[in-house]
Length: 81
Image (cartoon, rainbow, N blue to C red; front, side, top):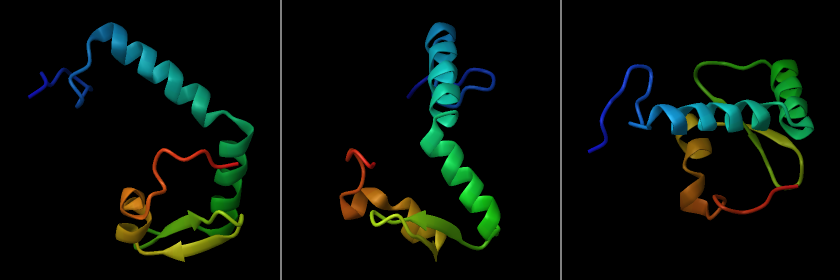
């Protein structure tokens, strides 16, 4: 099991954690991610469901379990436009 550092549940070294945070921030600032955040805010986020972006570009409100189990549907590791 990985060592659990302060504010670091994945047990990353300080150097790896800083690199990961940098990657996460740059990913969050991409045009695609900012557009999706804006859409989510327009639809209104709720604590009992998630907003799922389909491959056709539409947004569908789904259960949290369905939206976060993308690996079961083969959606993980694919390049989405």
